[in-house]
Length: 239
Image 1: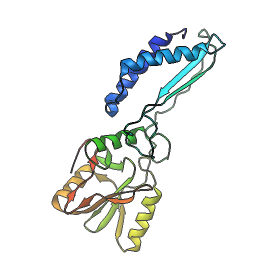
Image 2: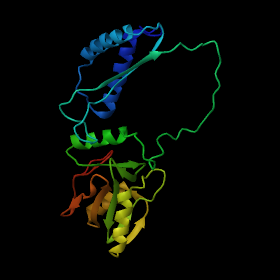
Image 3: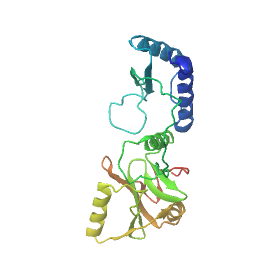
Image 4: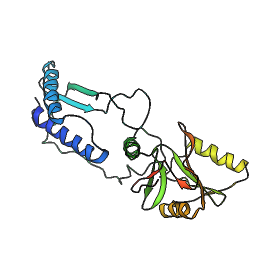
């Protein structure tokens, strides 16, 4: 067992974090108490196979392996457990370490394509649970992107999409849509769109089309017959 907290305490902390994740992303259908006992037994058996007295033990659980690439939680699959154990001496806490400071911009780089898909996965899952197809993100009332696509509107004959900045991914399909609209003679404007503008345009009929563009979905229309459908604005819900 770990010399710091022990396997039992680490399991409790792991389950506490998982419960916090559940509160954020929706309920994950696992028996936490049963999981606690199984993980304790598994970790102790793995540590017992090591020849060294001091080891680093890291374990992580995933939602399970989906048969297809997708953001929503796969149904009917078991969670995957990944365990990494290797010899490592506990740091000498009598020694002082050096630090630097950096501005925290970790969640302000949406324009960079990374594997940090947790927010998009959670939004997609919530949209599915709400009976919707997609979720539209907004920051302080500004529409930014969707869970897995760029968002655009056709309002009063004008194609409008968000300008590229650190909050907007420069999607390849987004650029193709812009070029196609220009080739069709549509006026294209890249500017900020507010949630209020989107809802008001839909209410008054000025919103002719609202759709998302992405590699997987290409260009999916979300509005027909004068109403928004299959669209959940994150923080608000409309159908």
